[in-house]
View 1 (cartoon, rainbow, N blue to C red):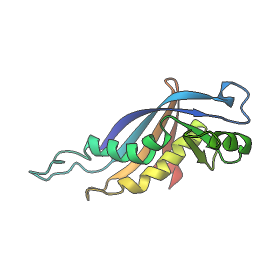
View 2: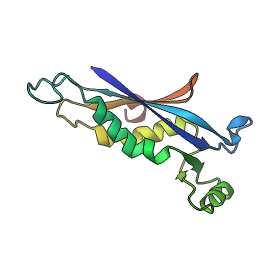
View 3: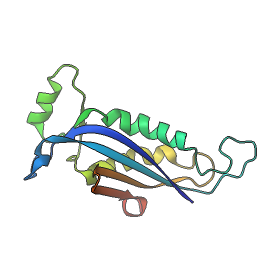
View 4: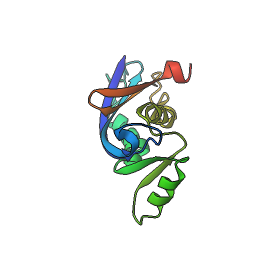
Length: 150
């Protein structure tokens, strides 16, 4: 069985080599977390009949990714002038990444952050299968377990 939880956050980013608007601007990102596992059969348990409680899916993703990236500027470590400028601004929330913050790279980073946090949490073979990151309602990237971890 697969379940998916959707969360939203706002962030700015810069793609240094891009020829269009993504050189510097922001998005209302949507993050979808898809997990697979067996449906829990444990009468009397609050997770009986579930793969995982959607509230728990949200809590983990919110603490590990959404709260960290929300209302931040996502900057590539190699874009030193921008990183230095942003970090010189008191109170500015800057997240410095080792990758250029494209939708593809952000989806991959979110997957790698979240994967160990969901692993078989309930003894029902729970596994993170996909992180889908929408940059706009019409554009998204999928980070898939089968492609990232084999």
